[in-house]
Image 1 (cartoon, rainbow, N blue to C red):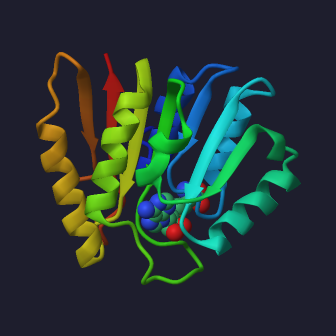
Image 2 (tube, rainbow, N blue to C red):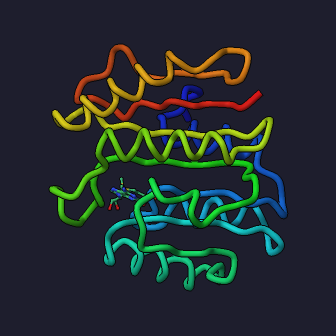
Length: 187
Ligand SMILES: C[S@@+](CC[C@H](N)C(=O)[O-])C[C@H]1O[C@@H](n2cnc3c(N)ncnc32)[C@H](O)[C@@H]1O
């Protein structure tokens, strides 16, 4: 097995180190539910996950996956844009995951958009507890994804280093635009 992990695996690795049993966490892009299941396992039976998606199909797929894993009780599933997360979540969270782009196996024209993504990232950073972490997996292989990634990086440059550590993780020598990761730790 390679020592250097891909962006998705490394995002999970970072969150595993930080998120505690009994905490709350957010899956900002539920999609097919893989990250929701991952987070729900980590917080245990006393924790709570908030999972957002704007597509009925994604919410349905995530719900099915959670039921199969017997984790449905731990998750508030919301057919809502992540930019509205502050309307629902009032307590600090230990981790927030974004996995941008389109629903695999779904409609490729429905994608995350820079404005709503950055608005959600700003809300999420307010909700993160000290020591908590936000991961953002970005896909630059399509034009809109490249624009979104560039805008997110520009936004991250504006975050004060006294308040946040920001990591940019990507492969420099791979073809086909592998996913890139931003990780933001609240100090
Ligand atoms: C790459 S998929 C997520 C994959 C998912 N994390 C998984 O483990 O299967 C991106 C998802 O973001 C969703 N999305 C797009 N805009 C959104 C928004 N404003 N708020 C929440 N979800 C959004 C899409 O509908 C799509 O399902």
